[in-house]
Image (tube, rainbow, N blue to C red; front, side, top):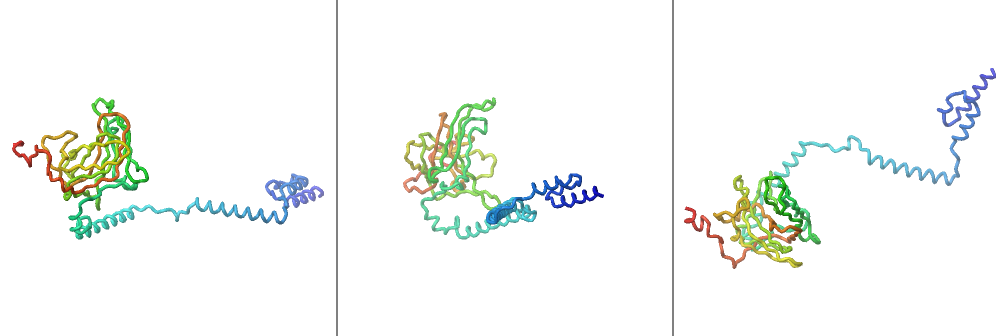
Length: 328
């Protein structure tokens, strides 16, 4: 009976211990139970200090709950990916752009009255004031065929120009196929309309290309492409030279469209054709002077204007239109 009384008394005392898992066995006795109740019991703090600790703990718990709520998102909060909705939004955008084009067409060219367009003497086609203006261009070099030239395009000082820079290398690639190398180019992207339809620039009322540039003294080739869907004519372009002076000063370059000569795959053709100014698709700048080293070309804007002093229609006589007897 004494043993039973002792066991019951020890079990009653161990129930008061805050760690019931440790005191679950009654055979530890009253001494270990007293030790558990004294050692695991939370210390009692002062009233002021206890209230401040409770406030601090409460603020920490609230902050933790907010962070957890931000990190963990419920399935209802996850964005739904719907291809049908994306296609519908894309179609709506294309139809909206098509509607705007139809309205502009009835108003006049480019959505302006016809008399304003006919009286226009100068026009800025490309200018560089933001990254969106740079996105209308692409750069390429002989790296596409295994060369070592590098070219980059970024915004100039104070976001008021475009800076084309890099390193030209005329070392031929070691592939056994290409014998020549060393070029870098900057080409404008073809403008697109609704439903990705190709557009073209109409410069038929102007006669001169107008640029404001600043270079390092290197000669560049200005290339203009016509809008055509014929595969055989995709490598055809019209080109002319642009010579930069170098130095810190800007220069204004004016090139009449009558000076541009016809070339195919980089070779000047015997039969020269006049550039069709109402179907211009893109313009580009190419450096290939075989002088290895760094280069740069800074461009403020590219435009077109009408020079009343220039009356020449075409500068080359070996043209089927001007001299058909040479091509009989």
